[in-house]
Length: 387
Ligand SMILES: Cc1ncc(COP(=O)(O)O)c(C=O)c1O
Image (spheres, rainbow, N blue to C red):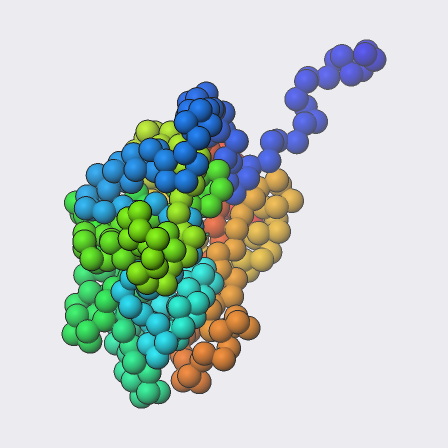
């Protein structure tokens, strides 16, 4: 080593470690031993499809959410498709979906043969605006569409406005199918996500608050009939051990190995949700006043899948953070009515100004149970310096 190098403080020139939007490696390091053990057990018993870990996870998820049935399925998208199929939604039907969400929310409607009708969102909650829902139902009816369901999304982990949405749905004879892909672990008052609509669909995609090591999801419901239908649909439409297809089904099961991983992660999930809420509170404290921070209220508990602010000149801010090794996300850059795949389903009368404004201004910051307070401060310092 040269004398000059020896004289230098070790960290003087070292760039600070990057901060990713998500950091799944730290969680894996915490849980690795337990997950290895559980995966080894699956390999020992060899029941890779609907093995004992799947039923154990289903029982724990049902208990966690306060619902009668939790059915482990292959992904969040498949959960939504199976929920729509179980509710008999298909050709000739329309389903109201928010215009500001992940594309799968509308794609599943089309996958079952129905038509999505886009509803504008509220800028403070990012979620379906109940006032806009009434207007979209009226416009669907003017276009000759037969609205049969409404599919609110709990964006970024915050439960949608299920109270008013359910009242409007009941008045128009619509079933509420909750796209809870991002919100497992959230709640409204004492009622947990999974128990806020007649049927709810969770995703266990790796970056979701409860994430597998691959794809996975769950359908949650109190309704015995819907639960039986989903169980049949996820196994080719078969009832129990029978060979006959009682209805059209699919290969929609959660893998046993993924259930084993999820059992391990569920054992620490409450503590992780608590930490996510702490991180969100720290961001709020540092950023409120300088940026539009997410709405918080006492009764609505977000699962904090993402912490998303709204800023002017979002792309410049994002680039500056990126230069400093800080990862951010754009969820979502394009409102659904501007996706090419959905163009043929537009009625032509869509007015969705809030969804469009949000698409131009949202910025998601690093979030997760393992980000440190120091890292949150670093993100905030860098962000505040750019605003
Ligand atoms: C709102 C929303 N709906 C549906 C999905 C689809 O879930 P999955 O990726 O598990 O199929 C996602 C996941 O990214 C989502 O965020």
